[in-house]
Image (cartoon, rainbow, N blue to C red; front, side, top):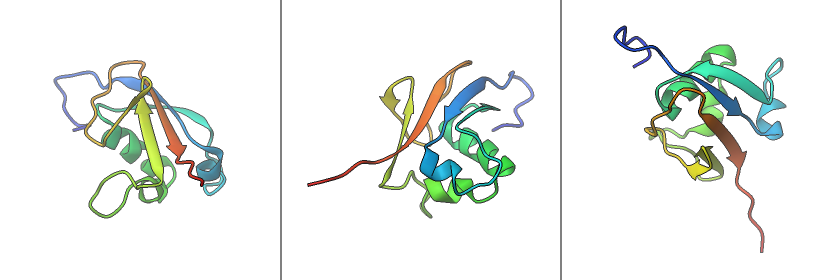
Length: 97
């Protein structure tokens, strides 16, 4: 979808958890990417830091159970649409008992 010439690709800001950033040398906690959907944003991250998408998504593909993605504070899926300037936050799930 990133190659749709009829529309400008919105720039969004992705915030990554420290645990993920620590696995990819040179990666940063906050990064701007161009993406129509959460899936596109993860593809853009994977282009910069190969393997990052696989840490967030499983083989279905879907967001892994222990990862949460939020767009503008709302839980998101891979198909969630992004508007220009959207804040995308990737978080590791916290569990306990």
